[in-house]
Length: 269
Length: 289
Image (cartoon, rainbow over all chains, first blue to last red; front, side, top):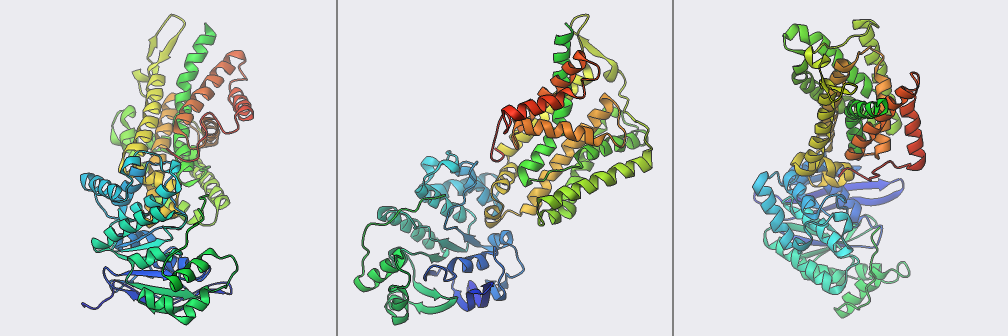
């Protein structure tokens, strides 16, 4: 079965009371492919990750990894099968050092023991630029390092597909550049990526394909430039909710091809 | 002299309280389960020893080699089958489940062994003592119990901070969902923690039945000492638990010197006093570390 996609979503439906976050969502991701996901707040992007990683249960539909049905597997199983995810608000194990955070992931997620696990943890730490803070308790890291640790921990589980939820959110442009390098490096090693991000620039520089989701439906799927140029996508990001930074930024990028400066910093709780 | 004697005896009595408290501290620190059956489980371990010693023909002092592993397995199984399902419905359910378990164990023991007290005779080790002065002597058993208690705390602490299993337990205790996302099966991890907790409480039960006597209803008394040790030490802090147990032991023996009836009350008063001054205990902590 050479044509089996790595990840496949079929007719995913998910509603919270009356709010629908997925209305028959369907798409697939090939081995090694990188897909960006954009959409207004509340479009169901993060819920989609929850459904793929097993934190949320879909009301209907199927999730498959390498052809295998995931619906009845819990998130620990799915991680071992090759799904790695990060959270928008980083969730490091606060009392543990940066190294321990990554080591646990190498043990549990990648199933490595002893020397192999410490080796993987060290190499992930140097890849993600965390080597210098390896022995610091994760609870005392700043936002940039927390975001990187979130990514490092997911990488240490040796995922086949990496789900990135706004890892660049709240970072400055140079910091985003560094992050892009890390993601590109992971891609080079063959990991597929789905990346939700408001900072469209990061996506355009990393992904092969862009999917735009709104109201639980896919309204655009294709090459990033094509999707950003679509009338429906543009309309969605033009003056929907007033003061929505991402909408402005996205439109800015679509029409001018570059980003304005003055990014707000997100304060982590 | 009698005060110094009381102080020293208290430190050693504290060892027993520490053994009772270690498992409570761990269960609470890892999964926020308050195990009301903790004392009864200890007593049940004592009774298991009472049954097994004549059957296996091994010296009473070595019975822990059999009893502790049995309780580790019981702990794991109970976590998976009983505590885990109740955790989903909130902490009150867990409290009720462990309370029910306490009642069941007590009544089963009453049915099987009557209300008479039992104890484990360990021969010379039980009666012998180090004579420091002609007024001050410390029994071998007291010394052994304190050493076992300290070793238990140190081993759990080192296990948590240095081993892979320990790191996973800490990760799960910190953020269960995030731990699952890196592949940790938290139910298995909880099971391991419960196994360790049951193993330590089995030690406490054996120590109690060697040190004094057990009756089917002795559990709750020691549960309270265990709780107080955990709380004044600081929830989730194992070093705090060690300190807390020793403080309670000293309070009990010094209280006894002051008045024969005061021995049982003094630790509770000290507990209340410490709670009033330091509501979060000696070593307040957010999670295990």
